[in-house]
View 1 (tube, helix red, strand yellow):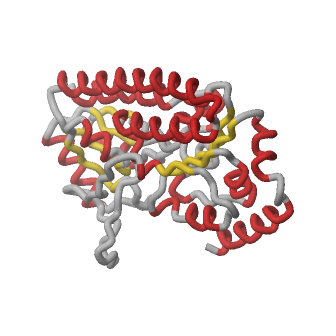
View 2 (view 1 turned 135 degrees about the horizontal axis):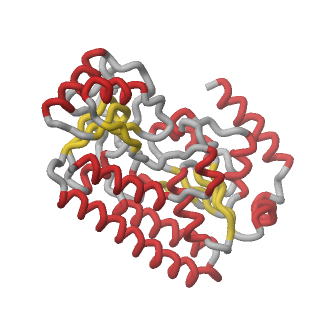
Length: 315
């Protein structure tokens, strides 16, 4: 919290220094429409829709944990200067509200969690309860990983395209055409997942990891077992949780145990060693490694790899 307050204080001083040149400075740097995003999926959606009409900047560094991100003074200035700011929303990005309130004149923004019907985060059988021993009152906690369903991704892209057209009216036809093409690709991806599920011999998947894929699982009628909910803090799992996952894999002859990106994979290794299951990556697309980022990997690339991984897990 101290670092966050210090960052905002420094940013306020720098914003004062830059007063009068904010939006023009942002456009000058990019040569067109400037978009700033907090997460990888939104960043990739934006760049696919932008094409050559502007640039998208990803605030969260590749390879880092999105849930613990704190903005730097430069990040805050970039948000103030951009034409469109896209963020997820939710508890893990609580810092955004303070940043937006500090910007004179406001910032055009799209909140991903406002684009879809939200699902409450849930704790299924065998899962560590991150709220055990804590009183959260009547507060409802929603799963933030809304982009993991291709159907939700379409809704998000529609909102982003509309915001881009508002920021750049001359490019409205471009954004409309780009949206149509990208939504067609998302429809193809959705159909592939539906075909894999329809052709599988089971409907259950196991994640020896966090499970940030509730929207995905609901979209395709999948049951799941996992160690933690999607937004829980990283922690050592209890022996009971690991034992439960091992027993479940054995009982249901689960052939694949998943981990998510940027995981240490230790729990998945343990479950696989004990059961003979294969360990596979299932990407939640919340962030990528530096090598993937530098190579230009896309949301579509990651999700099509997920199609293949899911096929192996359900057969």
